[in-house]
Length: 80
Image (cartoon, rainbow, N blue to C red; front, side, top):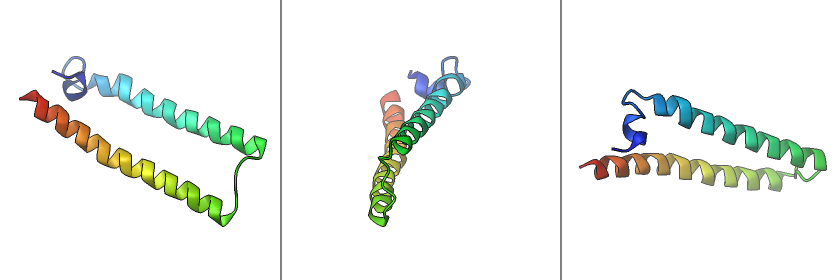
């Protein structure tokens, strides 16, 4: 069985020790990247720049919201 479904020992510790830190590292990395761009002056504060970033964020959010349930469904389907 997949450790994503049952956890490393069956009670969800995989989520605590792997998934949560990975999410934290992603958030920290994005924050560092955006702060670096802000300091360099590469950030676009025009309305078009905000719209572009909002579109990119919406695409990433949609991919995550659709991808996670799809991955879970595939893991459950492969279980049988």
